[in-house]
Image (cartoon, rainbow, N blue to C red; front, side, top):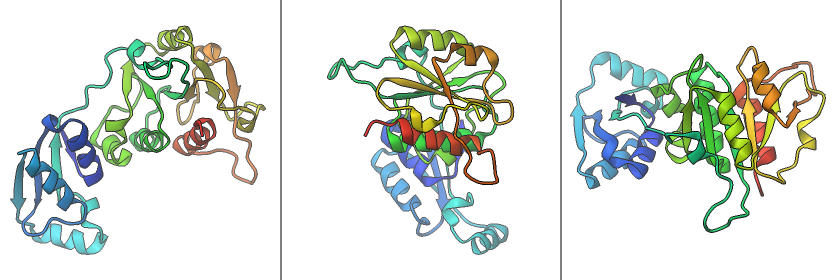
Length: 249
């Protein structure tokens, strides 16, 4: 069970799987900010809404931090998202309505910062990414932080957690996807990559990048060349740049 503190992540859960939202807890009186929308949606779904009295510490926190909806005064108890059970169900470029459709998928190779994972989910939801593969081992688990930073992205972007990324990449190739790896050491620039095919973009670990076996599976590898004195980017920022480049217009 997850305790979520971002009202936008809760609203998304109420939209896509209201049966998994078990309880909403808000301060007594008028719910702060977007939590008013959460309460309204919860009542429509007949979900328990509990009004809580704030203690002095919570009131001081509200005054200090400003945006009460961001500091955990209100929370929601939500079941973990089950995700897609197998990569084969996730990695399918064709649809019934458009058998020749393409799109963009992501694979996160051992990302360990939940803030990065959440930020990538949020960007993926913004650009309409078709699905995300996540590695089970040596990776950030799907904690409440991931859900809250994603601001609803976990609910709208299909994902699958896999024990063997290399095998899943092989499944992606058989499904017709092209694998694009990213590396700060690669001379090929991301601007040379076009959204002209169904791509699976692979993002590597924050410190070590892509594993060797993952790189070997990629059809193309590119980098984002620095234009200033700082020569590297945060993983979620680099992912955002690549997603924007590869998203079909």
